[in-house]
Image 1 (cartoon, rainbow, N blue to C red):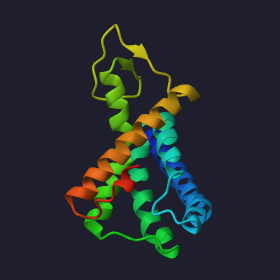
Image 2: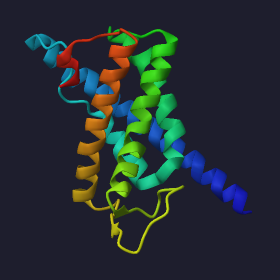
Image 3: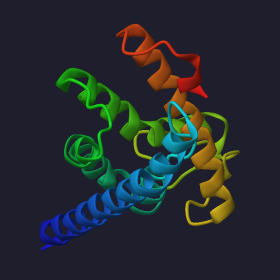
Length: 173
């Protein structure tokens, strides 16, 4: 009985995560990319689907990670190709999707290393001096979003530089 409940929860989280990331990806392409490319930007200053990553992982925990990974690949291939966004080869697409998906857990582990306590963080031992970080509090979610976006941009810039996809410093910003 417990296995059925866990599978049902995992499927609900997966569907919710996949749909929310996809909807925010379409909104990002339709509103942000079209206006930024009209103004002559080379990239995107506002990446709205990152909100789906942060909120889904904060609310649902690690159960959202597989769905975020597959939705990032799906949206990049099918939706991004429809709107003319450059599609990477399969190795780079998987690498950037993995980095993009894991940027929020990396930020959470970094916060845990700084002394914040998270109940939903697996594989981490806490001390009594740890500060409780509420993943339902909007101030804490904003802090996690900012730190994870810095991790995301840093890791993607390093990945793009190492694999010679792009070495444009504007991409980091």
